[in-house]
Length: 158
Image 1 (cartoon, one colour):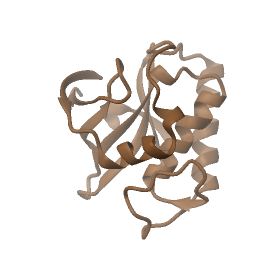
Image 2 (tube, one colour):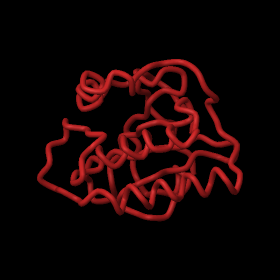
Image 3 (tube, one colour):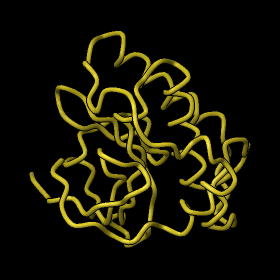
Image 4 (spheres, helix red, strand yellow):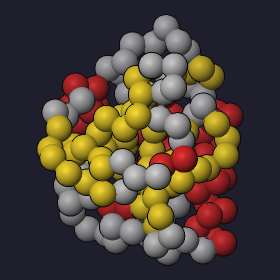
């Protein structure tokens, strides 16, 4: 995934940082993790567990990103997966929240994990983990690998 021009920061992320300032700190950690059987198992397990733990709620607002929601939308899934991966030892610098548009034209938030074997997506719309460029989504912006409080455009590659 190649980053380019700075994009506007999603308002939901700004509000999330106001509520969970510790989640929005910059610095530290590897920008890519080694993709081993162990790390793949951690990533897969967290993706599945969070998908199972949160009940979908299409009526929930798009600006309330919660680390404790038991029902919610894609924002809640993405930030809870991020938090759980960090708790399990994955470098925060290797994790990026990503704003995309689904094939149905709906705005959607996912979590991207940067590895030495490419960038992969954890998504509440699928249990399987796929490469970022195999999602079928149109990429709007991602958290910068240099600064999580800066969002950037992604150069598409197939």
